[in-house]
Length: 79
Image 1: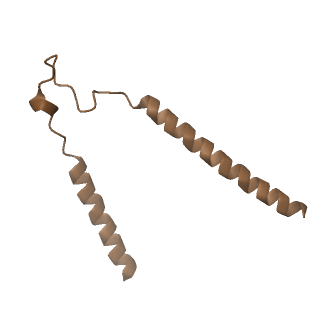
Image 2: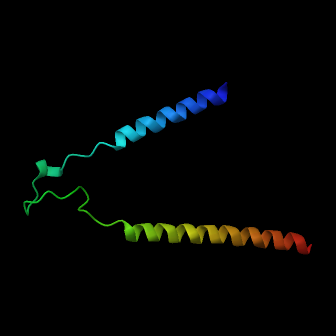
Image 3: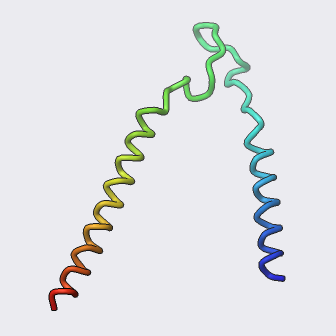
């Protein structure tokens, strides 16, 4: 019964979050920028570079965790 309640809460949160994230923000300054164009909030910066940095940092973190685990197992096998 507890797991059913947890499942219902999780599913309802997913629906609420998806409904809230579907709404776009209004443009800043009433939609008028100094050059007269309607640029998106954040200036339309690409996220590709940041994505690769994030993936690289995640791989480095996973590699260090794996190496430490390997060293611990190797030392316990040699004893």
